[in-house]
Image (cartoon, rainbow, N blue to C red; front, top):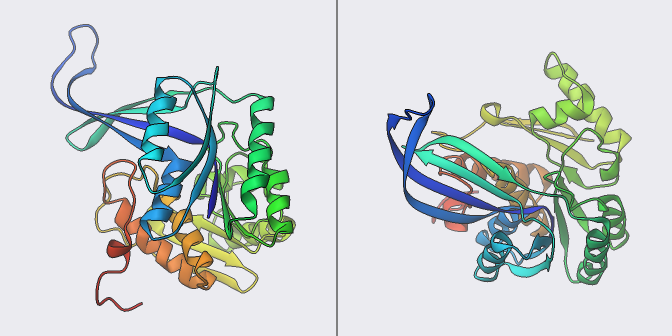
Length: 302
């Protein structure tokens, strides 16, 4: 699997809140420990290898401290590292302050890569494409997928299945993809609000036809997932027993779909498996992965 898109460093500061600040009516968190994790497209790639796939991660980071740290995390993981470090680029960082399993605050640090950097990414992409079976684009709207239309075209010319976690209002640049996986809010940005299930299906199916997609999978949090394809629609209810954190759940969903489709599973089976994976990962705190053992316990029947 070739994973392309926006990567970020997810930082967590864990602490306790025992008082309100005398300077302003805000809680004072006494930080006791820190943790760093691979975020964005890097988390999608990590989820893929956690399920037994081979994944190459293609993206850009800065040469700043955050970029160096993220590079080490990727290199220390089973993910094949094809991330370029570019001077002058600010690595995207999401810093979350956590107390008693609750997120108090998130701070984002980011800047978009320039045009020349993205063209360099395109060259490396074309070099990597031939050696991969499935392409996963993880679009967080940070600028790393400015040339996604051209990348998608190259992938389809090579007969690759292409899965996209989309962002923004204009989905025309995803034309010809195998599958896109917007959440409810993201789909509403692209097609407008709907007033019921019938209207949701009508809008999703129209989008699928307009963009020549094989399918649209809408992730709907506590309402589960809805798949729209030429065969009709499939609704799969959510399986989470207890939700701690939805951070990165979309990465888990699309990575699981890509792994299943790459292994030869049918689309409906892939969606049901991805739904189970989502139910597991939202029960974990922060950006997390699902292992093959968790998804397919010993003795469990598919």
